[in-house]
Length: 159
Image 1 (cartoon, rainbow, N blue to C red):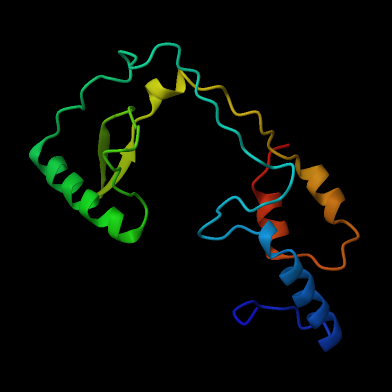
Image 2 (cartoon, one colour; image 1 turned 90 degrees about the vertical axis):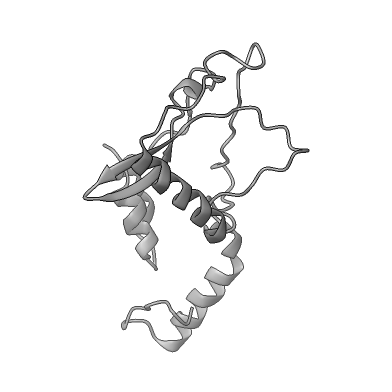
């Protein structure tokens, strides 16, 4: 709460109530360890539908890389584990899906991305519906507190 910007229109009692409310529901908010939060009803379930292990689509070799891309790829792979974005997989872990990693160039800068097109043929589509703007506005209409998160959620909708 020290880094949060609180409305100037709140008195000390309201600010303390807000702080207590946010603290009581802290598990519902996304963190770097739990990026989706823990709001009941918004759980995501991913089911892989692989009929035959080691599908030919998923076993194809990586794309050949030009020397410039290969060097950038090696730099990214050295950097990303240090940042905690990816981790090395141990020998005892059963990870059988290996897909190429592609480096994209834009303005002489590279970025690392995964190619999961073939994997998509083995997964079920996401059943999570994107909320409609009108529903979001109705939910926050008579709220005592409206947060930046309400604005972000409302901005990231369709309808």
